[in-house]
Image (cartoon, rainbow, N blue to C red; front, side, top):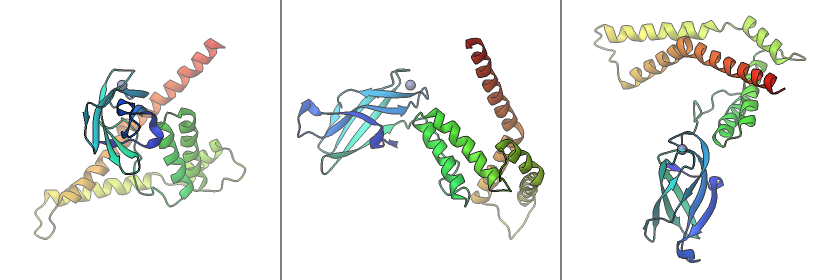
Length: 230
Ligand SMILES: [Zn+2]
């Protein structure tokens, strides 16, 4: 269930056009949970109404997928709208601050927000800004291009260190599960933390190279399209 922010509601209606009847959304923009397209859903009048809530359906114009829309009435002619299933929106990797460098966090969250409202240019710019923020705060960046800063970053940092630590920790954690130990009992928390780290390592080793190659190929194909168009 997803609470639809007021900013995504494009049009509202009232039952039988009665000014005293509570409002419900007739059109709202959202990333479709069925086809992932950012689109404007249109909803017909609620089929199930009570003094406290309306329930109805809305349809995606791109894939004709249907979502349920629940409008809960609150005092003062305002209402809270929930949609099910939730949009295929992008979530941040963490709700908490990722780094104590506020500008890096801000740039990253801006990228996610921009993606979720379909501002692709802003998303791309904020991704680059995040990258710039990360490398800039790690070394001397005065008068250097981002390209130069990235080269410096990789020559001055021991980037393998966190991975060495990660794999050592997984190995040690595995020993705890494999050997009998009266005093140290593995629990769900420990299993979850181990699984999170092994997920990360699998992603890093196998998925990350494929993803960056896919992005490179996509950027090259855009270059080729430009050449044909030009
Ligand atoms: Zn759709």
